[in-house]
Length: 200
Ligand SMILES: [Zn+2]
Image 1: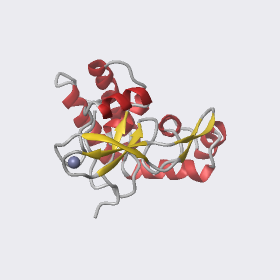
Image 2: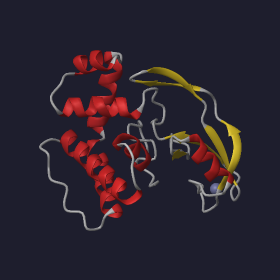
Image 3: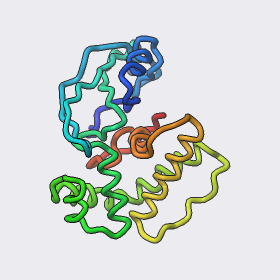
């Protein structure tokens, strides 16, 4: 069994997600069906640069397979308490040459937490690079090759940036890291995610 249950990364705008859910415009991650409203998932803490807040994600139930799925806002990554923007800032700082302790104190995150993100990102760098390069090409078939940036993690970061830009060009505005969360199906830094899911 994969450790990651099928779930869906959605827009952080609650009203829009609600409308999509009620209108049957959210596809089921497990089958061809669509999701309808199905209560809320458990409350969780989400830490951002401006502090922590409580988040209670919506849940949907598939009208086809009857499976229930948590609709995680794209500010998050699966099983991470920090906003993807904070995690992304740490990854970018590492690629720019900053050490994990300095990154941690600047972002107000525990040093071990930052070290964990960086280690996981480095372990998955090639998988991430390949996945986001594919995303970029799928979003924009005309896109040129992703230029090697000099190291595994730099190449992975560059691929994320290119894919996020291609997404914005195609679908409109969006911050790069929430877009990256969507394009990874929330499992950017998951432990043993079998594969990324494709979600736009
Ligand atoms: Zn389904």
